[in-house]
Length: 386
Image (cartoon, rainbow, N blue to C red; front, side, top):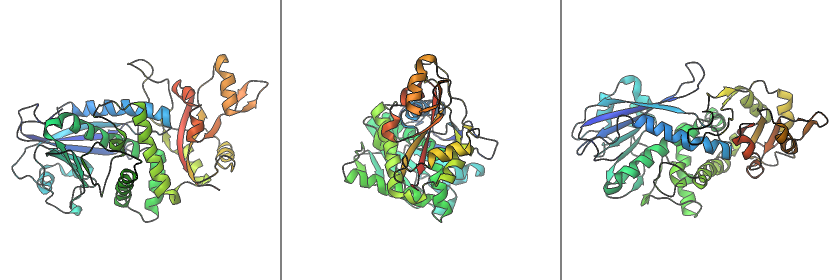
């Protein structure tokens, strides 16, 4: 998917819709605008399907390995005519008015000029274009980041950047992260403040040697992608270490910057019983296994049981991120001993294990085989210590 693949001048807008949402109002849409200029179209017509499928393929094992959920996105698009000296105001004028606030990425052979104000209604929008080096630059008046890919490596670099931004959006929409962001905005913070804090944290991690980047120039100020900091090459597939770094950056970021907005026991109980999470199923490998269904509500989990686990001061030793493990599958005779040893016994004589256990990132590793097999559903929670 490079700058020189097709001979066509147009602007393509890719939209993304959350899969498995509730009814109507829970649907979120995102758009990528792709400007094919000069040598051709930057992304093919089926880019939306390719991006969504690859992002979900990376996030499904991340869910199993780290307990972070994700919101799947349907990515599609709209074509607009290109024009010399096109700026963001021109893009806005050519777009369907209903889609403006959902625009997320503008990809162009020649950089689309900022040419507008922050009040144009775009929300978060990033500009990706061809340049002489691979750079993540700061934001301008409308765009939150000006990203350049090196011309001779435009294909793999462009694909990696766009894919990672969508993976970032999918993960950011998970119930656990949204619960923290919701409390932050309720206290007077804004989404823009949140994005700037992400950019600050990313710069801090690079400066301290706690993260590395493939960018030759890296200076985000209004938005940063943790997925881009997690990768070691431009492969579409993230390996296990890259997925772990991706999740770890999100966890450390929220613990370092937003601990004041972590959940109380009552808030966590509400989230678990009313929020939406993917139920774990046997991991799909090479097309085999069960594909993930829509995220669902786990309201059947009893409040008293949750309060006992989430309010246990011996488990929640500090304000931090934890993984609530819920036994949602029926263990076989061969598995029942291991399940009981991990969850404890409700009735050992009858071989009935408890259903809930709160894990740290370290203790959760014992649960991963059971999550991978579809017996245990993990729910990442950011909890305040009592």
